[in-house]
Amino acid sequence: MKLSFSPAWDSSKLPLTEWFTSFKETISNPSIGFFNVTERSELLSSCKEIHSKFKNKKSFVQVGIGGSSLGPEMLITALKKNDCEFQFINNIDPDKIHDQISGLNIEETLFYFVSKSGGTAETMAGFSIVSNLLLEKGISESEFKNHYVFATDPVKSELLDLGAELGVDCLEIPSNVGGRFSVLTPVGFLPALFAGLDCDALLKGANNLKKELLNEELDKNILLETASFLMNQKSLGRNQTVMMPYSSKLRDMGFWFVQLWAESLGKKLSLNGDTVFEGLTPIPGYGATDQHSQVQLFMEGPHDKVMIMLQVNKFENDYSLKNNFNASRLKMLSNHSLSGLMEAEFAGSLMALKEQERPYIHLEIPRNNEESMGEMILFLESLTAIMGSALNIDPFDQPGVELGKIYAFARLEERNQ
Ligand code: PA5
Image (cartoon, rainbow, N blue to C red; front, side, top):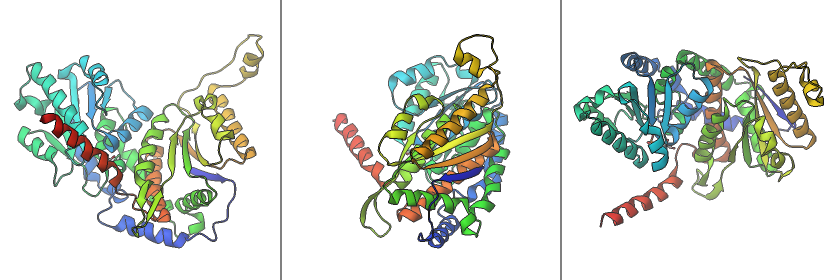
């Protein structure tokens, strides 16, 4: 993974040492586990055991929402290697769920119910629907253990209790890893194994990056460089962050990043309890497709955005554009390959951004593979944590999502009467 930035900026007045100290305190705090969890190899081993127990299943349905779905969706879209079929029941739209479950061959399907808290209404609704489906097909509760796996908090969770009652295998989501930081735990590992991913390489990528993230030479530390670039841009009014991979397979990284960035950094109160209404607004996009859509706004709209331009240096496949037609555009393409066109469009976009004085971070990965994915995940999670320090807010809570839930439950109660 390689990073470069445009334009140049002066970080000498920013409190980099303070942010770095705070980051190191955060990751050594026992209640914040996202950084160290990649070294708990037993979490992956437990998933491998479950994978081999259910390896005859040809289809995998993950029921979960937010952090219990977005990371796995990103892994599968980016790197799936086999023909196992995936469905993510990540919403409560009855029509969508109808489409997702009606064609399933139940005997060949593994249902993975994932909820850190173990009581999220949307996920429990999914559990109820799938269980009714199984009962309708003549599968009794005592047989659910042949079709279900759970992942939840190992200490306190209704899903954990339910798992014990039904004899369903239950994987651990460590208590100190929050939902949106949980992709490198059984939340992401089990679907990744069913999709044929090399999860050891995912962890290797993340663990290898740690040296760079903890580099004490602060002017060479990629985390500090990125945080200071973003804070400098924020001081100039650029408080929106566009995640723009030039890859269709990495498109879902944008949605994963949106949750991580928005839910972590969007906060009313500062760490001192002052009302600050803080946050950086994430925007997902992908190239080259969005060059025919959002890029007009990014190039000429309000000066309030920083682009994260993600480039894959080598694609796994390629196509020659060679042809004998006379049409001028076809002739122009004829000596090139598809990946060459992608490279030219990416380079052209960087030049145009520079010319229009639009700030960007150029993030390069050698290939779209497990190792790069592990690096990017840990980098973006760590960046979120350090941005929390820089913005003086708590990136690990989410008080703002609670209010809506309280009103929704009150409405359900009313409907009971
Ligand atoms: O990041 C978070 O904590 C949330 O977005 C959760 O992932 C989401 O609310 C789902 O929660 P749970 O896994 O407890 O069902």
